[in-house]
Image (cartoon, rainbow, N blue to C red; front, side):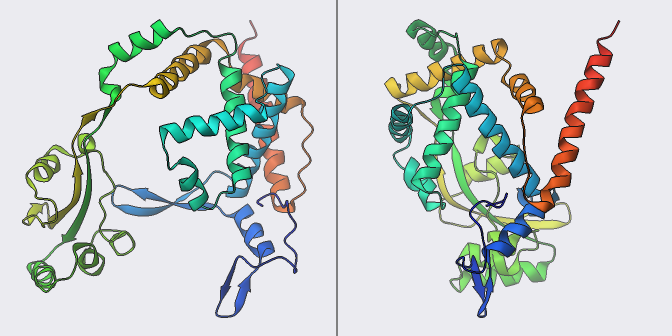
Length: 318
């Protein structure tokens, strides 16, 4: 869509309709191609960041690299077959029974899932070409890295931040009257992004929480707000929605296969420089950019690539 595939003329279905005024596919794709900011979740909530170039240019780079990667895999005789892709779906479903459901729920089609897996398999096959990992290697890795085979302690946490006693009283009153903690956070919390996140704390791994907060979480009862705590000029109150204690992962053949792949990739990353192969293929590739808003950006990308190659070559000259 970003690079103009699939049309998007007046006959296309609209992406959205705002008070009977449609946002057409053509408008949406054109805007997405030149969009220069993204919203990400920071420590204090959602923040806007500027991207390098534009989202459209970044997507174009990704799509070109995907095409080149599949071409390299075919040339080297390691391109994944349709049967391999089907087996990969089965493998991912064993690792996570909700694998396909989560992706389709996020708007992906089965064809898109298959294509992504095909690219992932091609990348894996190229990186691990010529690499052998034995069952003994897998068993040793599992024995030497026990902490990797536990589900870490996690917490679903909400918080309210206020700066005055009056605001504290308003929060306390709302909670006593039956307002849920997330709703109270969206109404009263002064933390950035609290309105949209409903006060959800961005960190879920207990091991990554600040020590003082980890102690609060450890002592807190699930489903009950904590007492107010002072943090500089602000007051904070927390609510633990759910806790999950650390537990060991049962080692089965699916886990062992995942470990085998991890070892193969670590070894292959040292032996096979896929990034270099992609850059070499890109330099000799013919890429015709058809979307006007991306032409200049792509030209600059290629010029930067050639310039960096020239500088590297000059640096190696005696």
